[in-house]
Image (cartoon, rainbow, N blue to C red; front, side, top):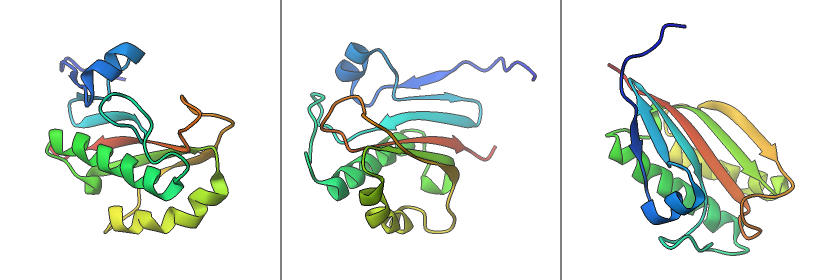
Length: 134
């Protein structure tokens, strides 16, 4: 693999929260963007829509859209979407909402049922990989 000499561009959606947990919400290198998992939280890092799977899912996509817009991108540029959930049956119940997000094609990716997420109130986390045209 050829080493890229392009400098990574880091983005923090909620700088204080992300610094306290020790991660960047996204990083862009060349035409690729990796976006850390989005969860349903407010700007102080508190879980939102506790117990409401559908709203948590919508909140995740809302945050992801903010990150994409920062990079002048959209869900049309997403090539990988990985979903982590503590309740796969609830995710499957609301998975058709993704048709409102991905209007022309669905990305590749995985749907993973997990025992727990970062905080017990989180029911779903979504991470993305994006490829931009040159």
